[in-house]
Length: 623
Image (cartoon, rainbow, N blue to C red; front, side, top):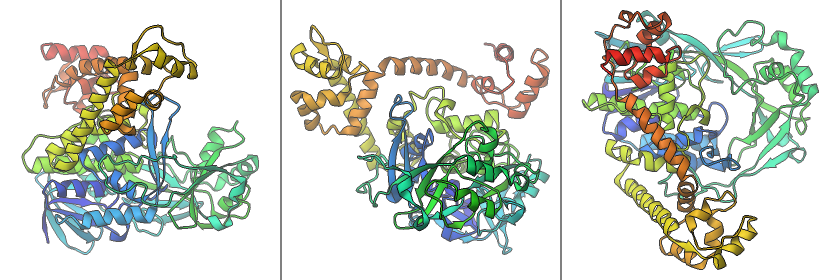
């Protein structure tokens, strides 16, 4: 039990996907984690998905990863967000039972015969000639491998803050990990500090929900996985609730700002811009007299709730006093306080697109140690690190997803090319081809790759092919079938859109903003008969409608992406000396030397690189 193909350090969301993917692809894997009982623990809010994050989970699922499947098994509420906007913005999100989520992940890993476990801290990497060959653990044991994937999350030199109280640890009631950062710094890695936080957990028995706005899930929830065979939803669905802070709450919080480690200089690291603490919100948005709070259940049968929007590092007494001024929380009791946590991370310009480090061969970084925030971003990195570690071990080509191919490709390219100056969170706005990267077509985009990698089973891949063919058949039907004015006009008039004077293709009518495919299917018998005969369900109809209604936008974006891809095919020599290009700005030469872009396309996305700099490189390459 001392030699493996891949060692994964850390059992969070990145570590779980990394271990699962590497083991499923045939490698012998050791997962080293400080607590086997907390594998894939939801450290913060008990939810998966959200804006752009939901698309990432669908992509993980399409490739053969398991975050989507685990989410569906543990889901207690599903919502498709942004329905009022275009399909590029639709994003699935699911509340989960925290314990079922973690237990399901552990069961999946235990059922994989290629995964071994060791509960311990990794204190040191074993390096030989600039290659990692294993790890040394706290008990003194050494394990050897062909690749190591670090997914230490917030545990590397983790320090929690509650007012003036400081506790060493990576998560409440759990210890910290030390040793690796210091060693990597000695080896030439840049090490930084970041900060995140979490709110208090409250007792629902002390909450007056009648004073809050109930927020239920979708009437017909979809789930995440394209391939899951569970009867979704598998668990009883639960409601969330909305309430608000008020000026009195803000006054109490402000009275203790001198005790806040965020404001008194105790915390010097970088916090997340898009998930700020409540004290940050009060200061940054001083003109607002209230902030929205979401009360989210932690499980299917627990009274514990998470207060989304009230992350805080203020003293415990201030947190309770302020919460009790919120409508519905006047008598609230808490299970544990909110806190801020600082931890070590490694600026991601030090890794390649494969997530292998540039300094040490066969060493991969995945998750929050790359400067990201969120379960979904971590899981995606773990999956890709696991895939590329196995590919490297087997002497196969690396797998790098393009920006027009997946949000995962956008995520990793942003990290490697641009770096981070704050915890990175994925948004749809980060993707320039988001109409191509919809949540509904992730399987069409990526399932063939997952199957060829040995991650996605053949039966699931065949399911995807069948779905794709049915969508194409439906789109073809819409493009070729006419509706006469006699049939169409009553429907159009009901939808407050102009009638037609001659027969029109169904696709032409669906192209109108007011008309949905469902309006026609439900009211035209022969169209409904076609759908029933061919097993066309609501997911097929939705995808076919998107391809029909947004055909022009999709075509235009595809053409643009294809032009940009040409730059991705112009490779830059690996050992090029950028200092020879005196026509490139000093900043440009420094950035290019640091990032070492592989292609002209990547070079063009580096902050500080101008079009004229790219022109110099193109001339050098004979272009």
